[in-house]
Length: 472
Ligand code: CTP
Image (cartoon, rainbow, N blue to C red; front, side, top):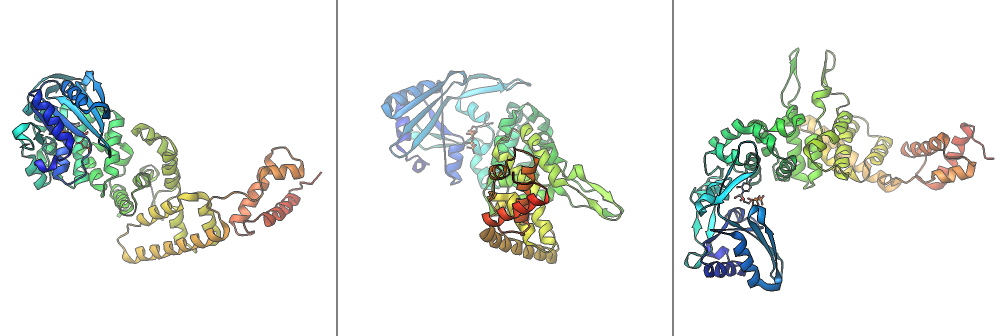
């Protein structure tokens, strides 16, 4: 494996470690990613004895090109170094034996051997180490057949999975996240342990959980991760609203579709078309209010009235609980959840210009993402139905372009503004001014007048006359 350690930083670490007579190894994700031909990021180095001392010695050797950060509490040190092209980050740690008490994340740590250090890592594929010392430079140390697991595409813990997961319950999510990103299977014993220990995810901070979920949702086929989260029993602790989507109820022989699996199909459909993470979250939550709004009506069958509006209202609470960002990204998800029925309703009816204008007005710059979500939402198995919907969507898209070119509604700015109206009629800010403004807006959206100043001014004068507003 020497040919993978061609960067000069490795021979430098090797020299420094040999001089100090310190066994030292590159370990973890960096080695795994070399073998998987994935871009490798940060380099983790484990040594016997103090990782901090080795980092300090390396830093002295690198001189002014390097920065050292020491984290005494964790016994680690990070060296950042600019090699003329880019920043390289190397994290140093002493090999440790570690165990955790049952209800705390605070570990009891002692010095250990390389094998001890590998034992306490999460998965066999993450426990691979490459020696950096003298003759052994580039030698692979793989006590748990991590290479075999990469070949077999398996996520498996090095030790009894109950121990590995109880050391850090976040690893249950990491197993699912790696299985999703790499398209690997989780070894049955390992997966059974996740099922047994799922409740322990409660002691993990929501920020760390959100980090893993982000990696799942950004994967090529994110549904894999959510299916595993559901099957393992973790999902109700992570997002109970999502877990509640699962299941089918039947009344008078009529069942509705399983909204959990439908949601995941929509999510994958969106993921095929877009890498926009927030559009993917919108897909995940687009039907989130269906369990709450579900009713059975003898005439209509199953209905989910207003699930889009109620869903949009649920988003801030869900984002707060899951520690997702509460900024414009949340607002974007909310908006898409609220509007996700509009193009479908449009496509079911005659596509009028005025409905298209209103849709453009409400969606603004997010119209393309909304259309993408709606097309992804057509998951019917009835080919004829799908064809009809997609044809109508194509028509809606054509009209959207046509009307946007003509009327520029996307970032609508009223052609007559409130201050002009107040000045002309000598009115204070009042209900009347608001009514005149919305009369103009509605007339434009309904296609009664074009989105132009003169027409809008004339229309406003007429509306004012009808309302009995006179120029002083
Ligand atoms: N590790 C672990 N248990 C954890 C987190 C990390 O055993 N809960 C170990 C693994 O050996 C892992 C290494 O620490 O390979 C580095 O962890 P990290 O940087 O979080 O992840 P990577 O495995 O490098 O993967 P990614 O960069 O995709 O998160």
